[in-house]
Length: 220
Ligand SMILES: NC(=O)c1ccc[n+]([C@@H]2O[C@H](COP(=O)([O-])OP(=O)(O)OC[C@H]3O[C@@H](n4cnc5c(N)ncnc54)[C@H](OP(=O)(O)O)[C@@H]3O)[C@@H](O)[C@H]2O)c1
Image 1: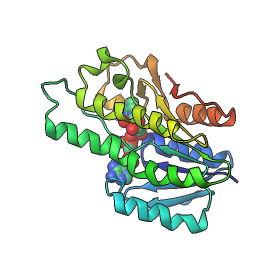
Image 2: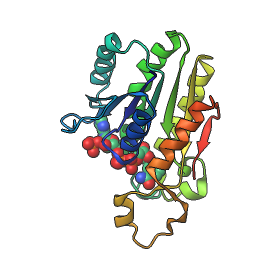
Image 3: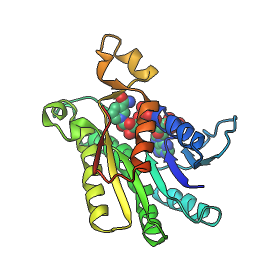
């Protein structure tokens, strides 16, 4: 049985990925915020509490899992958040909030995992969740703090790929997720380009199943 570590497993995308990969026979290490372990249990899903903004806590939690799960084949790092605003709104505080939530939470997991995957037979795969505004300046100009913070994930994946031929790092990109929160906050939006969290999860499994190495996985 292969093992996948999924962060943000209490959120829209993370929960969908946890369900999907567990249903496909993976052992899922489902990372949630401290105090957020669900009362329900799911076969093949182990919930794990960690504050991913805290580097030491995150490393310690991953280290503790090593004994029981000596091989982690894949990680899907979904924790992240959104703030709208162009350059006028992107002050230092906004930049720091977005950097912490979108970059540090991924970095704190990817760093120890990369080292570990690089040493294990068969290597591993790390999937980051990017965003179009980080790639497309016309979309990013109104989302400066968000776009800048997500852009670092693409560069991090490049660095990791340059540093290993055993660990493959990839970034997923989509327009918007079809979630209750987005439906509520954007009631009049054209939802034709939205994608469900379940569809993203299914696409990720296909990419893994085909052992695809695309640096950027475009879902919608
Ligand atoms: N939603 C969209 O339309 C959209 C579009 C493009 C990209 N994305 C990206 O897709 C990803 C997933 O989005 P989503 O809608 O699934 O997000 P979400 O529902 O808000 O889920 C994010 C999860 O991260 C957890 N989290 C936040 N801070 C944490 C911390 N310090 N330690 C541990 N866990 C923490 C949250 O847990 P708690 O709330 O329990 O703390 C939550 O379960 C994000 O990276 C987002 O930027 C989303």
